[in-house]
Image 1: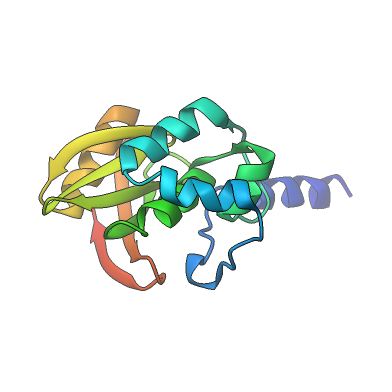
Image 2: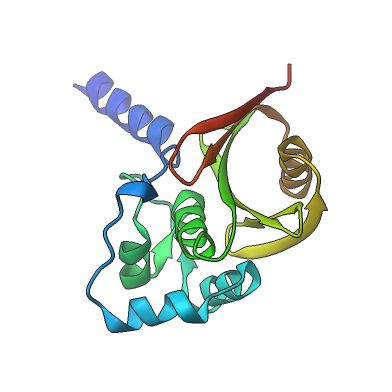
Length: 170
């Protein structure tokens, strides 16, 4: 029995933080405050500032939250923040999400990426990072440098959850 409980705990930790909510299927709620945010949060910088001021970090071991759930709960992790940021930023520009596999960590990490003036900037959790990168691998390298972690793989998704690029670092 102890082995089964231990196995369940390990499986929970292995799957935590490793999912993206399919924003293409997200249905807008009938909530005037949430809908007003779409107009108010019209730049990645404003979106991240809103997240910094209103959300706290809490590991979410269940499935990722959709933007409205995070808006209500106000607690989430990197995939929840990434989903929220990409949802709002997509109204005003080109957005992506990157799933990063670290060499020494069980959890996967997610960042939101924004194409601004032909260059890529991103958000690390709730923080906006002005990088002006020319490609996705440069974003991954910089994010991993900030976290002091080495990456082994990354996957870039567009808003509709299509894989548009993968990178490997042996």
